[in-house]
Structures are given as structure tokens and as C-alpha cells.
Amino acid sequence: MPANEPTSPPSDHAVEVAAGERFAFGENWRRFLELLDDDRIAAAEDSLRTMLEVDDLRGKRFCDIGSGSGLFSLAARNLDATVHSFDYDPDSVACTAELRRRYHPGDPDWAVEEGSVLDAPYLAGLGTFDVVYSWGVLHHTGHMYDAIDAATTLVAPGGQLFIAIYNDQGVATKMWSQVKRRYNRAGPGGKQLIVGGCLVHTVATTVAGDGYRIATHQPRKTRRGMDPRRDVVDWVGGWPFEVARPEEILAFGRSRRFGLERMTTCGGRQGCNEFVLRRTAEATA
Image 1 (cartoon, rainbow, N blue to C red):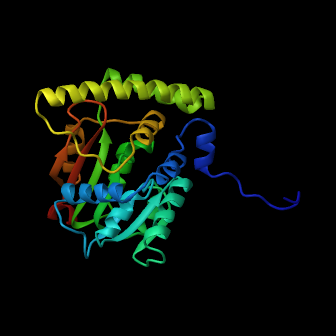
Image 2: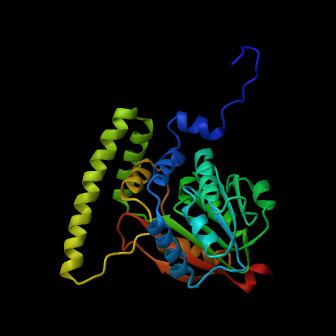
Image 3: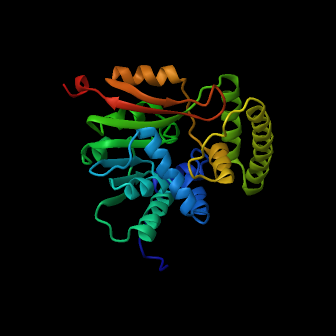
């Protein structure tokens, strides 16, 4: 590049990642796209049908806050929703745009943009949606309740808010916070060691859980079309990191006149609790 050619300053996102204050989610999702297949897409579609209790999303406007890999934006579009996807991470935006290019090239009913849920002027220009979806994202903003509050403003009268928030495990949550901070401040070798140790922990926990499941005749929990290794990297690296108990999210929703339609918890263990909340008539007054 010529010495006199101007260069753009690094984005806030790039600065935060370089400082170890934010995980590069999009880089992880780029690797996931190499594994994406029809079965994973079908699992994502089934997840939306089940949690939203619909057969399809025809005639619905769907907003994907923090679209990540773009898998669930793709699933919503395949279910005939008009989709608006946005993410703070430029690499995640690129992943979502790549899925649109692969499966719905030139589609006018699927918009992909870079944006932040904490950017009030940006949200104000989006309008409202029948379904606002943000799975495992709002607790990574550094301002979780502000982010949830902002997400509620995008929900149309009578619309649904489908979010997933990390479960508060008390002492275990504090331990994982330390692991996440160390991961984001470590070099490449240190990151590999931390992920390796967490993979061993995850495998051991899964084996123990399968033994309990078989002994008690419980079905295996349905996956969402994601990949176990990429999920572990996402979990270990995911920073900023906030958590909440289910009752805290429900109380916050009620304060914004959102009633619970469906909830799936992780049973007090590590993971996300899922909530589908409906905006009530009182919220539009």
C-alpha cells in the first residue's frame, strides 16, 4: 500500500478483540460453515417450528439479532419469513451473507447488515417484527439487560421475542468467567490448551449424562443443528459474559409487558435457558 494512501481506523470490535475484551465469534462461525449440511439446516428449522409452535413463518417479519453463522436466519427464510439479520462482528456478518449467497442468492426478502443491538439510532430505523430472535447473544454484549430491553422495542404488537440466556450457576459461573477471561487474553497455544481441557470436561459430562439418561429412560435432548466442537469454543471464548436465573428474565419480561409462551431450561446446569415471550396488548398502549 502506498505510504500516502489513507487507511481506515480499526473498528471498535477489532480493538476489543485485540485487547482480549471480546471473543471473535465470527472467526469460529466461519469454521462451522465448512460443516454445514442439509441435516443441520433441517434441525435448525425444526427448532424454530417447535419453540414458536408454528408450521412455517409465511407472512412474518423475522429479525435475527446477532446472526452469527447465519444458520437460523437461513432456517427462518426457508420457513418463508422475510428476514433481517444483523451482527456486531464483521466476520459473522460475512458468514450470514455467505449463507444467503449459497441458498438464496439475490433474495430481496433477506437483508444482512452490520449493526449493534445497543445502537439505538440503528434499531430505530428497522421498524418492528413479528418474531425477534436472539439465541445466546444478548449476554455477550457487556450490557445484557440493556440489550434485552432494546430487543423488546423491535417486537411488533402481538409479536414474539425468542431469546436464550446463560443460566446463573452461582460459584460455577464465577469459575467459568475466569476461564473465559484467561482464554481471551491467552496466545494461540494457551487458547488450544484451554479448549482442549474444556473438551475433556465436556466429553466426561456428556458420558455421565448419557448414563443417567439411559438409566432413567429419558430421551436425548434434540440438537439445534450446531457442532459440538464449535459450541465448546464458543462457550469457552464467549466474552463479555453475563447470566441470569429464569425467574429474573421472566420478571424483566413482565416489566415490559411480555408474557411467557414457552420456556426450556437447562435444568440448573451449564447452558442457556430459552424463552419465547409474547408482547401483550398493554405493551402497545
